Amino acid sequence: TAVRLRGATGHPARAAFTGRYVRRDDLPLLAGRFAFAKQGDPDKMLWFARNGFWHAGRAADLGRQTGFLIVADSAGAPEHIVGEWQVAGPRGSGFVPAPGLRCEPDEAGPDEGEEGGGGSGGLSGDEAEEE
Image 1 (cartoon, rainbow, N blue to C red):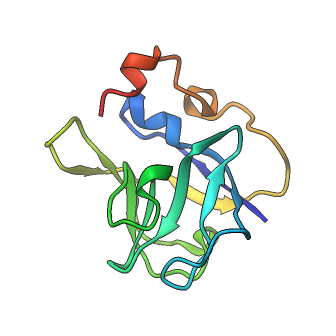
Image 2: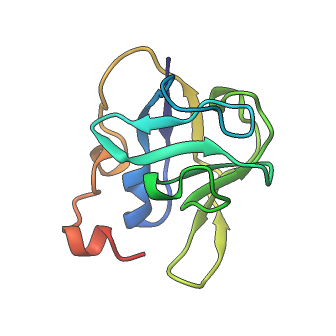
């Protein structure tokens, strides 16, 4: 099972978190839901936490109440999210609405031209890691 997180983030470094995410059946459920890993970049994951938010963030934070893209929505699966996503601004500046972001089912295959190509958004490693 796979989903695609797509749309404009309004922040170049956050564009790296859009793209195709594949369900990780091998991981324990988090707050009763499956976690998803970004195809081709397993350091980026999508998960639900007990705070009632879905999070897109780094694998090191899996299950925690933190992420770079978040949405307050208790949907049982990310493709059923109807809430408005928010994007983390530069360090310490909080979150801003990202009404163009959405998560939808995707059984099609690899990334196909997401904002920033679903990769690092054309940023160098230093810029992409500036969080």
